Image (cartoon, rainbow, N blue to C red):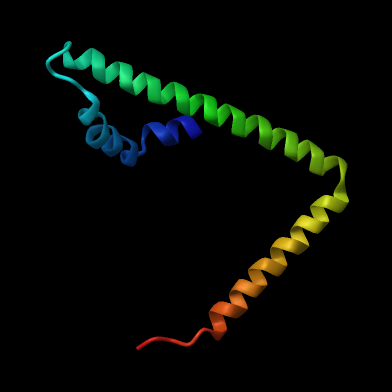
Length: 96
């Protein structure tokens, strides 16, 4: 599902169209292989970073599953933080 979402994401297409051309040297080699190489390099780096994030998330989920106290603490902590932010936002004076 994530792959399909990323493939259909127009922001990524805009990123490639706007960012990659500045790294292409038209005097050195054909343009298409340069674009493909840059695009594949970016995809490889993204895949590696996402794989690390998934592995860490799995490890963290297993850690929390074995320790329900940590999960309870995390829920209360985040509820407190969000409650404080909501109160601060509600009490903030409005600007004209």
